[in-house]
Image (cartoon, rainbow, N blue to C red):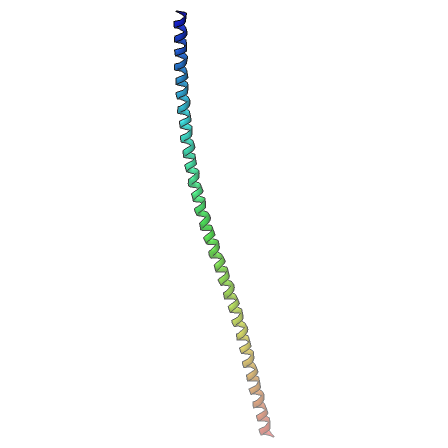
Length: 111
């Protein structure tokens, strides 16, 4: 009978161990599932971040191009103003020469 009790105790212990193992396995599977979901969320955030970064890089490149175009336009405008100023000075000099010539003619006619 003592042997029978030992066998029953061992069987009971085995069943307890099996149940505890099943509980541990279930908890591990739940933890793995939770970890997979967290990983999927993080992967989604990583993808969103990468997409946002790519958009920022495109915007930066567009701003650089716009700045370059603005600099070119400013340079062209500055050159145009300089040329225009030279032309105006040339016209002023021509007009002054014509006026002087006219004055000289008028002076010569008076004499």
